[in-house]
Image (tube, rainbow, N blue to C red; front, side):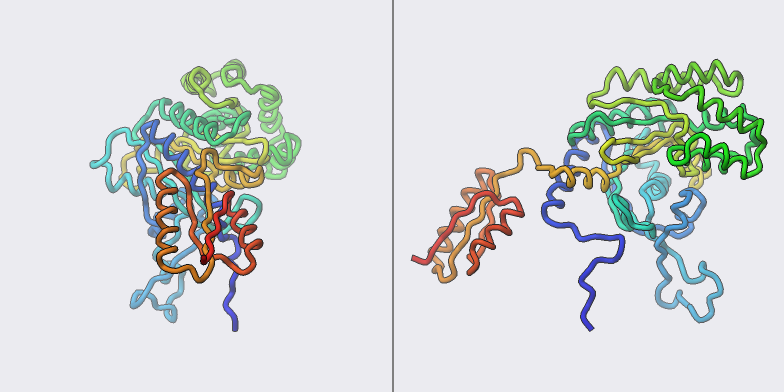
Length: 419
């Protein structure tokens, strides 16, 4: 039986042109993030299954590719639970591995520590446009910084990077988990119900305010609380300015929202607006939830009009490292949706700027050694001048060969014959 030549469902082969774009984008990301003081690190593709399934990764924990024990440790015949046959899992994001890394090496790292990670992650998800089972994540995180300087730096670094790649007129939507809780408390909901309420709120862009109200009513919440809750969002409808949104909340939520939280958000907006390089808008979005249960404060998302959905996000997770060390450490991170960025660039027919001229040297079969050596010398000289030179044998169907090379970006051709 013939082997399967197609990649596993949800994973993909990357063709040369896309690889060229990916390499270019990666180089811009690394260069820009390094200029903000972020330090590249790398963590293993696999983590202990206990780390990955510790109720820190939200819905992603249901999507883990689990790795069976090996050798004498594996006894399938006598196993009665999954824990008896599984010990590792493929990482589903870069945040859990980062927290383990920091917990293990904190004494060797500067404080605060600004980490840059680019690497593959795996989720047993349903593949769709811009969503794969193996994909690249690109994260920056600041560990050990308790103030909103972390949020400001993360937003500026991320947006500067997107601007240098070529994106503009996008939005960074921002909210605060403490604001979400304050609105729920004001409406009269009990704290134990917050998670289910926020899950429903997260559907706002799909079902609207009426849909959220109806779903909350179906879950058994009182009409009085629901009415008070949706009234806040009606009040904030159309409000994008962060400072304006904070003032409206302070005026209407009273003691339920601490002024410190509103000031925290306003300070971020003032600093970002005053120093941003890229063309984007920082937008207050009171419906932004971010599904990860580990977020404790500020949360944000990237919205690029061409994609029609989130192209990255992040937030503050001050309690996550404490799960490893027993002591909470301030932490905040921002992840670019690398695969979705690449998808948009590919759909736009993106050309890498400043790419070297690509020249193909086609050598007729039969050329003697002296001729080949001469051609190799010419190719060497051309490469020292910055050209990309491919030396190949000339095919019988030379026209088709050139068409294929042109698809790979070769714009010049030199032909060498045996004479």
